[in-house]
Length: 305
Ligand code: AMP
Ligand code: MG
Image 1 (cartoon, helix red, strand yellow):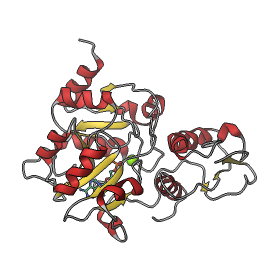
Image 2 (cartoon, protein in one colour):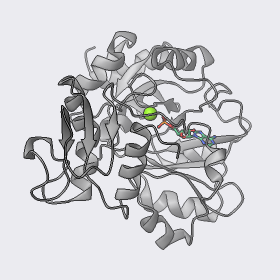
Image 3 (spheres, rainbow, N blue to C red):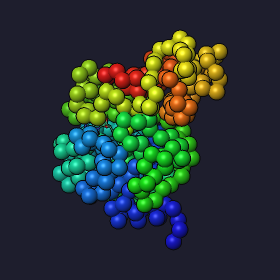
Image 4 (cartoon, protein in one colour):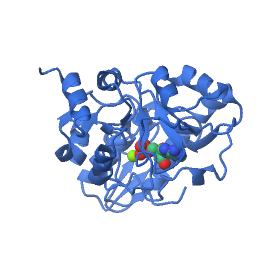
């Protein structure tokens, strides 16, 4: 049988790793229930074990078997799934997401991905699938099949090509642990979109509850300088908006945040291949998707969030 979806599901069942396309970034997938399989993910990425993984499921019914949803969590799921929103919720005792995947916490992060191939693999497998970005820890996330394969292709048994990632930025992480939603990580679903539905998000200090917010993250080899007005000696300038820098390196020539999000990691990776003295990035506005773009840029530049 050569159906790639079936082969990927079989690899998961055998405790192997796969490359899984999602609409956000390429994921390194493993069976969420099996500690030996999950351990391979941490090892292949070089990811610290205190940083828990997201359990990807095929639909909301599967998510409800893993986590406890209150009415506001359910409303968020109904509005944004399938799609780039991760909910951190109380884990059910029989969750099917092992302790290692949850880093020993009593909560669990769940998401229904928007990419049809991701949902098809998960449905064919039948259980939850952990799938952090397929890069080695600390590096920019891969948003094309080639980039994913370059990062962790050596560690996988199967790899699914789902084309370039449409969104290009990781999911927004929102916890709904005690009624009040809190933003743990800005992402592809904007704060404004969530607040329109759920009311004001608490956020200050909540970052501490998300163990994965390492300071230096998403970083290429070249040093990254943000809010740059122009390229310095030997630097490549990633522009934003009309007439800023070389169009070839622009995040979006028209100043479109959606396009800039889709281009961000790809441009960082492409620029890094030129071995520049540094990568300078033009200012990107902070509202809407700009919040997540600036979050990733600050971390790539080495600032603590
Ligand atoms: P990644 O898989 O690298 O995109 O990251 C998943 C993000 O979700 C990280 O920032 C984790 O720290 C966060 N996360 C996953 N599970 C939990 C949890 N149970 N509680 C809080 N944050 C979580
Ligand atoms: Mg990641």
